[in-house]
Image: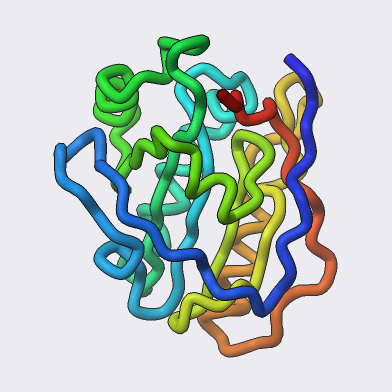
Length: 184
């Protein structure tokens, strides 16, 4: 597995709009349909990445902790399924159900959404305010597979707590690290 950092995504950038199929509900969902009333977390993941597998439980807990506070969560997979068939929509659905994802798991077949967000890795996290303006782009926390640091979601939690309190975005935003998105 090649360690890939997230690309820069300037604070204050508007969230690129999208409509993608949700592999769980089999419905087309738009960003505006699933955004939160107070903020939105868009994150790029996939089924097979060891970095995503490492944080799956924390992603579920994070969404469960913040959804009732007006934060929407949207997971997107943009991987090339011809070369990585384990990331195909039917397996995405199974994966989401098995892990009890409380958020939609959308499939970006064309990879246009990943390109619009300049996503580079899985996982890759973006936090937007109620107006869909970027306030955070970076890591979930300092934990990585094998580094013996417990998964806590502390970096995203700090960004979300600040957003909910109306504070300015945190300035110390560390890149996310993970497997590179599998481009066609």
